[in-house]
Image (cartoon, rainbow, N blue to C red):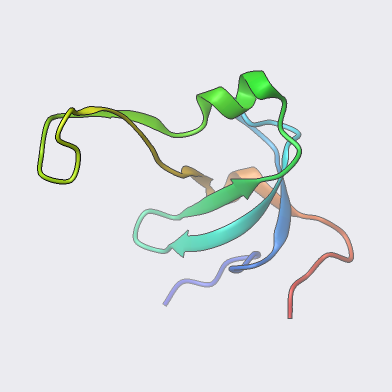
Length: 88
């Protein structure tokens, strides 16, 4: 089993990528892909529009198809825990 420097519920700061310098909370750790799924707080409206949009084909769940929201994931090496904000 892999061991990481962060865990579910921790508050982190993103170090790299399009979400650099944003603060977020970890809602899941994907050990097979070495990624963490993030929930952002205090994002600007422009960045909020970029979060997890994905186009889908027509289906029973989405009869019209179109854009669907999904979470943002980043590699675990691109996040740093916020000092003093560890979860229990």
